Length: 281
Picture 1 (cartoon, helix red, strand yellow):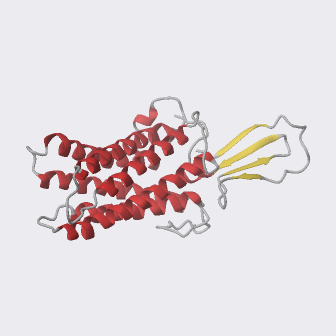
Picture 2 (cartoon, one colour; picture 1 turned 30 degrees about the vertical axis):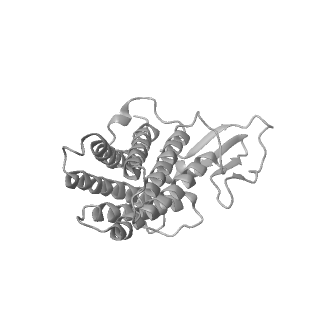
Picture 3 (cartoon, one colour; picture 1 turned 90 degrees about the vertical axis):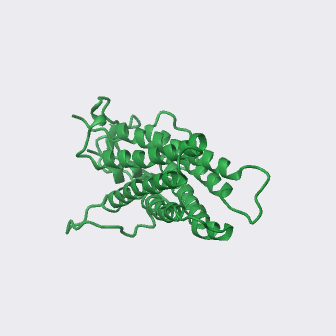
């Protein structure tokens, strides 16, 4: 796989020297670098494609349906599994909570948080090891605060750990209102904020700016849908706060609806990650 795109510059004949690179990205990050080569071609480097080992133009065949030897494929599949469990648990709560035990639904939420954490770590590991070292030793987490992709992944991974705590504590019975806020709501709102920050950084990485409109880019659609899912998760967390006196409206139902919408956004984004990582057969 390659993270380099070569194309004619069309500006002037080949020169003897390579030009200074043109760098683009939302300050202080660099997400796109263009170098004009001495033969008149341009070499384009993209942050997301580099860290994930993606082709600039993915294969148009259907081989993305089964690519178990590709880490990108597993990341998308595992994210999709966690999203599906969150979506199903939310749907069951909304339409069948009277017939299904809340213990089962809460257990499904916790089960869904495990694939989220697994896929988030795989993505962090992938990004931390995007730059090959001489000793070829794997980097478990790394420290790359100047890398927008690494920051996005580490924030998402931390958010999933908080969701593990949130959903695990959600299985506890007979909690008072303040115990629900302390054990369940606080990790929920913190995890949702981290998810939103992570989603925005991933989106800006594909835009090469703070905001952009790139509907022809599959990567842009993936990060946009995920960002919308992050917004839905944050709205869900806001309505999940349990006050001492219950409000006049059904805040819990609103929270679950937005959890379902957030899970749907992540599921769509996860499925789109599969063709994004397609390789030439």
